[in-house]
Length: 462
Ligand code: ARG
Image (cartoon, rainbow, N blue to C red; front, top):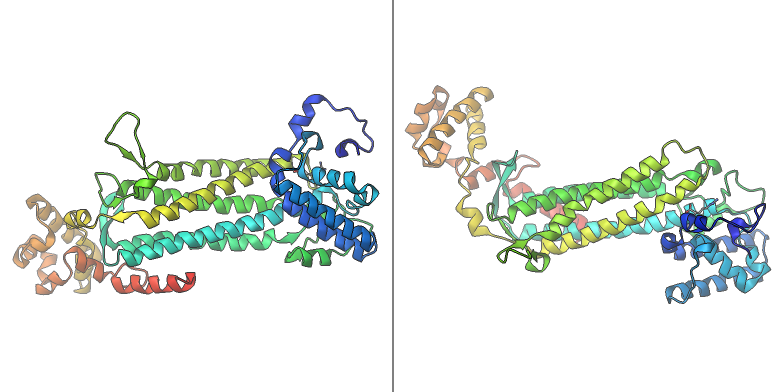
C-alpha cells in the first residue's frame, strides 16, 4: 500500500518538507485505542449489513486487537510518512490481512473517523476531570469539618471586610467547582453524538446501520447531518472552555492561598512537600505549585483562543485546519488534570494557623456591618445607620480600640442615630457574634454553613 493519502489521483512523490509539516501521528497516536475500538464496531456493522463476511469481520477484529497490543507494549513502529494514527492502524491491518484489511474503510472517511475517535477520547477525558473535581471538592469539604468553628476575615478590594467561617471560604470554591462539573456534564451530551457514517461529507450510498454503531460505541445519538458532523468541532471548543473555567477558578483559589500563606497574612501553612526553596535566599519557602496552578491558566486561555481562531471562517465540511484541534485540547486536558490533582493534595495537606488568625481577628472592624444591621432592626434607615456606624468606627480607630470595647454611653454620644442603642448591642459586636448573626440562607453563620456541609457530603457521597 502506498502512503494512503497519496493513493488515488496523485502520484507517489511528495515534497520532502510536506511530510513533516502535515503529519499528526506525533500527537494523535494518543487516539489509538479509540481508533481501534471504533474500527472494530465499524467492522461488526459492515458484517451485519453484509458488506463484509463474518469471517472477515473476525479477522479484522482480531488483528486490530493485536495491533492495539503492540502499540501498548511499545512494539509498534510509527512512521511519519503514514501521517496520522488512522493511517497507521489501517496500514498495519492491510499489511497483515491484504484485501480483507482493505475492506475496513468501506463506507467511512477519515473525516467521520477522526471526529468519532476524538469524541470518544473527549468523553473519557471529561469523566477523568469530573472525578478530579469531585476529589478536590471532597478535600475541601473534609477541611470544613477539620477547621470547624474557625473564623477568618474575608476581604473585598483586598481590605478586611466581614468575618466568615473558614468552612464558608472553602465552600465558596466547592460551589465554583460544582458549576464546573455541571458545565462538563452539559457539554458531554453534545460530545456524545456519533459522526461515523457521515462519510467524507455527504454520507454514503451503502446500506450501513449507524444505530448499531451508536449502540456499540455507547453514543447517545447519531449525528443527523453528514455535512455538519464532518466539521463540527464545537465540542472541542466547548470542553476546552469548561476546562479553562476550572483553571480560572483554581487560579483564584491559588491566589487566595498564596496570600494566606504569606508572613503578612500568616493564616495558612502550606504542606512543605509542595513548596520549593530559593536558590539564593536561604530563608525562603516559595509556593511554586500554587503559582504554577495560577500561571498555567494562561495556557488554557491560549489554547481556547487557538481553537476559536482555528474554527472561525472555515467553510462547512472537513478542512485540514481541523487537525490543529488536537494539541490545544490535549494540552488543556493534561494541564487541568495535573492542576486538579495537585490542588487536592495541597488542600488536604495545608494547616490553618488558628492562633495567628485569632490574634488579629478583632482588627479591622469586621463587626461593623452587623452593628449597622442591628440599627436597621431598631428602625434606623440604612443610609443613616451606615453613616452613624462609619462615624463610630472612625472614633474607635482613632482611639485604637474595637467596637466592643466602647461603652454604651460612648457609642450613643457619637451620632444621634446611635441613641436608640441599648445593652443588646453587645450581642452583635465582636467577630464571633457577628458571624453568628449572618444567619440568612447562603450566609456564613455556623448553622447555615453546617447545613451546606451536610448537603455537600450527601452530594459527594462522603
Ligand atoms: N489527521 C487528520 C486530522 O486530524 C485526520 C483526517 C484527515 N482527513 C483528510 N481528509 N485529510 O484531522
